[in-house]
Image 1: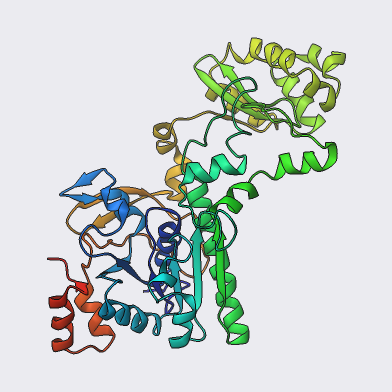
Image 2 (image 1 turned 90 degrees about the vertical axis):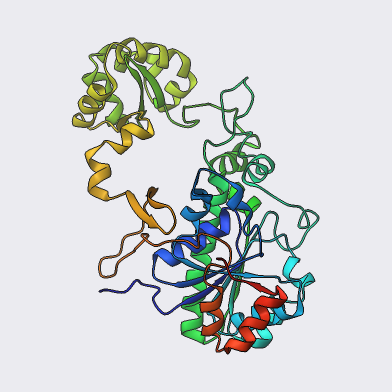
Length: 400
């Protein structure tokens, strides 16, 4: 059986909820050995999030698949010693506590470097490891709101809207994955590890590149344009007979093709729509004229007609409709996981594909905190008496 691209890489994962667990999930998908550290008892906060099967959170399982689990009381001296022994044997540490949390416990980055000088240490915090906000907790919507991402989303004149999914969390997790990949390459070349710091606020603002560029040119931020692009027209969402369709016209040849396909040659000759700048200025009138045609046609019929004409277009689909598309099945973007204690459940597949090595998301998570504690302690070389003493003291917990 072929091995994943990160086979042989060991990761100590202190992550919780979504952003850093998302990164750890992808590391495990790619073959890394990931050890998930949780607090005894309730474990990761996300174990409280449904849906549940047999009292096991599928939310937790999805983002912690392929990870072995150990439950450690990191406030105890014995627990701290276990953490440092684990840190001494891994390549990468991942965490997303509030800045300074592990340092206050005496097991932060500097302490881990003492036992593993070439360690790669990756952290996600809400607002970075320094600065006036660094001590504050952060969730996805907080980063989106503070960064301006929410304020730039929605229709002009209406209340701003948040992204529909946990965009800031997953984007921060992906940025940490990128950073850790570069750090592994750096260590391969130099023999030295790196610290990788990711702030969710930075990641959210990083997605606001177009408004920032416009501000640099004009000194102002454009008003929200809802489902339409601020710089191009027609470029957005339009009504069809049975729903909506999106058009992405960014070249004059596409505008001409669109008018021809819809039988609207008169619009191409209309001075209000003579070029992109004019169409942006007269966007409302343009939408009204185009929807006279698109509103009489089914969205999938429009999609086929316009795509054949060289116009970028797509029907707005529900998740269920996406699931039923042949392209979805061909790309294997939805997969099944066999979870111990649950059975089979459906998840999104990792979108990264390699030509010569597999990516395998089909691996069970630790159904309960400390599911693999004994196994992990044995891997550290601890003998039976020491393991039993740690379990008896409560420094480490073994599920079941």
